[in-house]
Length: 209
Image (cartoon, rainbow, N blue to C red; front, side):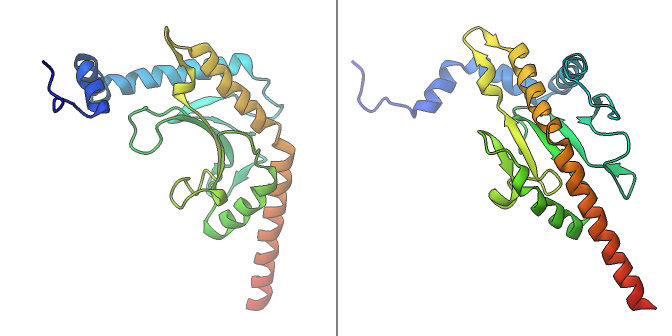
């Protein structure tokens, strides 16, 4: 006879039912194998992007350097030998902070220029599902240097037979394409930001004379 007291919390019961698989997942995510496999996945995604995207003239082809990066050769450059860029992030699902893939705008500016540029992005941020904008997010939820982006949630590409890699890669490609459509708008905002900064420097110079 089953006792009415012999009841476990539902989530714990699921874990215990799948204890062997849970142990394997914990060992995998705590070891080095997942890092090596994620690097392989990012390399495969770079190849997919290179084959599937129509890269605008004057842009570098997608390349892997921690994240996957796309940006114009020169026109989005900023002081400090860096550049505004599109960043594709493919983290571990066990990561403490970012547990899903995302496509983001990377803006490596110092505090005040970054604040002004971030505010200027507001009108061009798409309002669809899973798009995020730092001004509409909780403090600390979005990195200051990645003020707009879109989540590509791993769970949306899993089904009863496994993980649909082709659909997942295509979703990332489509999102990168959405960012590329914003190129002219971002060009305009960068030019405006540079003009504002040059004007401020000129005013400070006049005051120092």
